[in-house]
Image (cartoon, rainbow, N blue to C red; front, side, top):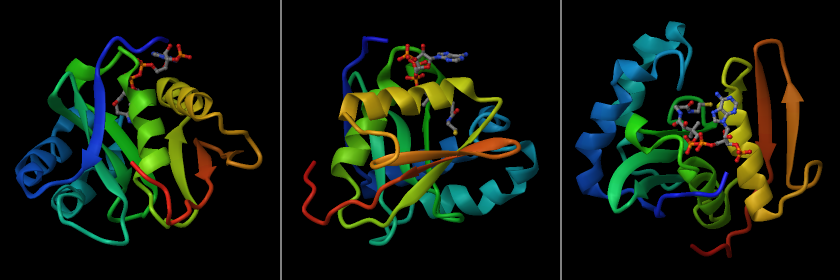
Length: 164
Ligand SMILES: CC(C)(COP(=O)(O)OP(=O)(O)OC[C@H]1O[C@@H](n2cnc3c(N)ncnc32)[C@H](O)[C@@H]1OP(=O)(O)O)[C@@H](O)C(=O)NCCC(=O)NCCS
């Protein structure tokens, strides 16, 4: 899909915190962003996501100049995660944002994984498109491990010299 939105990925600012908490607690994400059984954990995750951490790469996604989503490590599991608010979905912004995050916001980060439910084909398609945008190769830059209910998509460590 050719993106029809203008996408910016930038570091998390203090002023993003209330927004990150609010969207992190939005029940719309149940069954999309996380399994329903993980719902109580969001009471911890949503505020923790909004706190700064040097060891946890994190970024805000802006679409058409408006705060639209998050991409970064989950504060509980350390796995990478991403979401866009419903209004920003379906225009190719997700893959562009994921690619920009992987290319420029993981300075010196270790290998990490995305965990994508088999029920979320769109998310896996978005990741594949992001890798394509980056010119990444399966086997060297990323690898996919298919599990019972989800696919673990491992991405390589990032050199500390990467730039935004
Ligand atoms: C997943 C998400 C980030 C994708 O970003 P997006 O900008 O909405 O992505 P788009 O729908 O525009 O396109 C992504 C790809 O998915 C494909 N796609 C869209 N809907 C799909 C569906 N129902 N099934 C399979 N593929 C689908 C698109 O065709 C596109 O692939 P292409 O580039 O090969 O054509 C976004 O939809 C989102 O935030 N969803 C809710 C939260 C979530 O699921 N997070 C991930 C948890 S693992």
